[in-house]
Length: 334
Image (cartoon, rainbow, N blue to C red; front, top):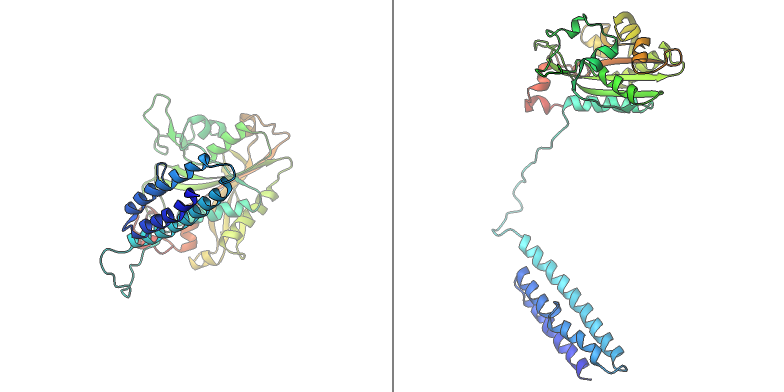
């Protein structure tokens, strides 16, 4: 059978061509010559159709076996040539010490934010987000902030020079309004984000900083629910020995309102027994009416605190400006 007699010589010629290829380009040329669409071995396979019916099985079996062997040899040679191509062109002394690559880290504020989010997620809260460029309604009006409130003055808030008098949000509470306006109760969210106020930069103030706002709305929510959540979160962040106390305060969007103080080894290290850390309260009925919630049916609480303040207490940092100077010597410590 002439076709069977041609298989072995052609296979040996292909194997020799693969082995003699000096580089990947030469190997590809050899592959095309034998196994390409117009290759010599491919042409042999095309002759199968012209064989008598009784000769086809033996010829087909011989061709398939040879093709399998050629493909394995091709893959093996390609691996050898790829390894050779990857080797250094110049001699390399592998006993030389390696170059140490500096690993990047998350910014300390990002680390603290992620820890806060993890604490809230343990008790069923989800993260919400909203725009940093806001309007008067979401930032003030809907939150029951009167028109003559000092926070709305241009000396305290950054207003943009636009016809609709947009502003940079002064707190993340504006996201509460957006979430409640879009979905019915119950609501259980936290809102980490950047906020802006017209403060002169010093050791404890910055024109831009970060807050985390929490909101829980459902039937029968009480101040005890607020206190339990606050204690859980701050003990998770500041240590199990942390103590919490509430002091009466005033916020236009909560009633009653409180300021939260905490005491722990961290505050005592700073020479203080108690340190103010956050503001909170039960959501004002007028705020519920502004978003379409019935205050006779739904109750809820909200609280917010600064992420920079938490980070400064935890890490013993005495100047908030260090977070924004991008000094690698400072950032490498976290």
